[in-house]
Length: 126
Image (cartoon, rainbow, N blue to C red; front, top):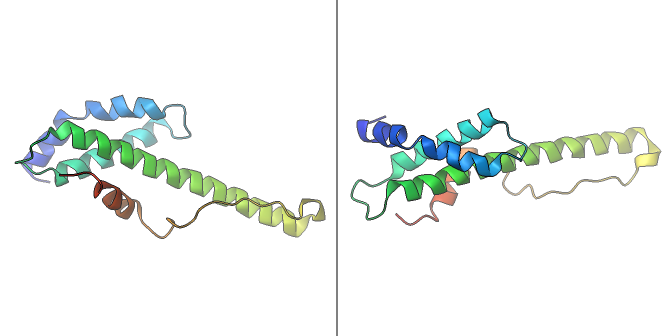
């Protein structure tokens, strides 16, 4: 990590706490929120052009929020996937539960968190 990136990350750590508060009532722990926020802040610092005509904090806030939302979506998909597995087992083992299903959009399952964040960051004009 170069010095400019390190400085941007260090100077903007407070944004992680600020944005994490928006997600406190969701299924992520404070530690998970902080980890996701750090990943978003790091990504923003690496992508920020030094000659940009906008404040770094604008990019950082959007990137932190996107990173948390991606991680949150992954957790929800995992939870729903687990429910789906339970439903399949119940259907198999107990005729009373035949037809119990859980549907969710699995179109993003093939992408890594990094790929999702990259794709979402492309929507932020630099």
